[in-house]
Length: 429
Image (cartoon, rainbow, N blue to C red):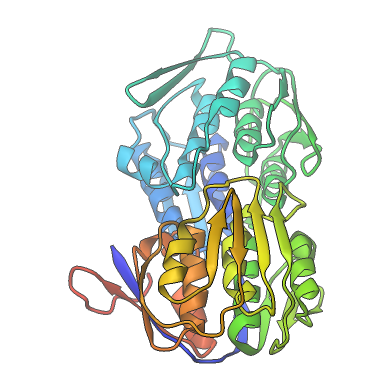
């Protein structure tokens, strides 16, 4: 595992360019195996999850290459093979191989996926969708086996009991080559789902309604990539840098953003008193003083994203009153609280509510990144703090943030990554 070392107190200035969306990328890579041609993605973030997904592809004889933000995947010689359980368990999004393998081979066998431990995230809605499409699902020894009969998958009406991004995407991946028409109701509306549908439609799929709560899919027999798919900007990475810039910045431009994807977040920053200047594809964050407390409640898109409640928290410490955060998606997402308290933050959790009180001073400390977004929260706090902050388990941060050391360094931060084994500076590759 790696450590991130932050020498705090440096005011940030300059500009930062946001990479491709992690939550799109981790679904697009499994989706690529549905293609009958090589596939090319642009603006791919350089994060650990991408490299783990490439290992999973390799186990199926799917060739891939990643350089300068461009990822090529050639599934034309794909074979059915056991998937590496270590890579599967390292990231939750590996469950998208259930839908894509089902669409490709009419069967799939996977270990239960891993990823961040932020409370229960069952896959019952995924399994319900596969069964509706004609699959048989059995579970044994922490492994899921999905098979279809001789007729294969067929179109069906799928009503999701809860709004789930993962189940919506998996339903699309399984249905895109099924016979007949599939209708997904109570579908999630996140921008990443539109991104997946755009990629598939450009290969000849018939997916309508992505971005609304009803998605229609007319099955096709073949998918052929005719051009490079450019991944949408990462709204969670963008929100993280916006929070950081308001908390410890002297004027920062956040570039390559889609402001419409961030409206629920930027509205809360403006409510706090941050004088954002929002342009067509960039947002300028001036030095921010005299901030007001707010109330935040996470909701499915277009509501306030659960992935942004933790990165916003360090900024809330600077408000002149107590702020309240309620996470309706993952109420157990509180791994950052104990770590921030080590640094002097006045923050606590009571009955599913996070209360953030004004905190004048943070002190560098040794803390632990329990998961990706908790880690992002600690990075921002470390930049705000006096002295040195050491973040253990920094691999969790690198799983979700593209070239974060390079980007922070360009903003005038003093940040480095070291290997815990050798304590030799390692950089981020």
